[in-house]
Image (cartoon, rainbow, N blue to C red; front, side):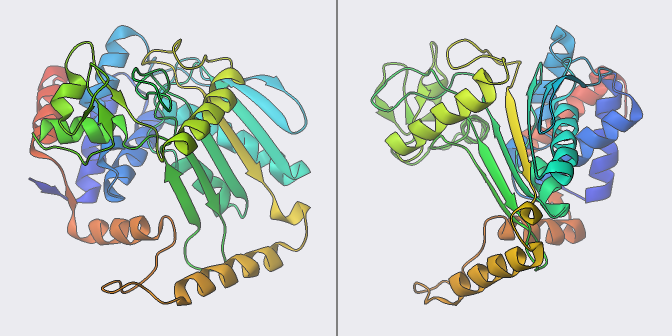
Length: 341
């Protein structure tokens, strides 16, 4: 497994995205967020997405590399963004910027986006709000991969959601989670390595529990189970309605792989009281949680996102591990596009 220094990996990724037809600023933004996912250890949403998803989407016309999102409908505290089939990272960043601007004016901004492609790691966008001193939220629906509670066939997406909260400390609190028991990307990576998964995560094509990803991927395909049974199922439905129905993108059973509906919110703590008091209260909660007794062998209770911030800082220094097959796929794509890796 090669270890690639972060900055050369960014440059390589920029070159690949640019070779797919993206202008420089788009290539820079998409590459930075893909490499950030690998820095955070979220390899399912890192540079592997270029050969696995984006190159094919560009060839099919699902992604239009030069497209720019626009505001299609707007009110004081809300907006609907037409992504115009641009890279999802460009659409989601633009949409969150609209939400942040509205929240700074009137306390809250809620924005949906349609004609949006795969956005990568969801946590990137609420984090933009938290870095501006606001509370951020995002939900996104996706292609049918997850069975409903008590169901045996996929009808819902892995439908992630994310929150980010500003603190008075070094980093915001960032929760980024799928509403499924495992993400499709993580399952695909495990399948490529020839490994098995824990029980209770997937069903095979016959609707029977299995730990073998090959049985999930065998035609006509199996199903991923929802996170925590009926609870994850309920959350997945909520995400589908907020991100899919509200945006006009579509909902479970009627989406496919290319579009991704998104809903984002930015909320200003200052609209409800002293923002310094809010951050102090959050910091107090963090301190109290970290102070409780820990189970044997555990040195520290971590906040959501804390491990990822630390891992990213370490990998900026030591380099980013890239799976052998992913590195090969990137090399193959680079040769196809006529660029040096």
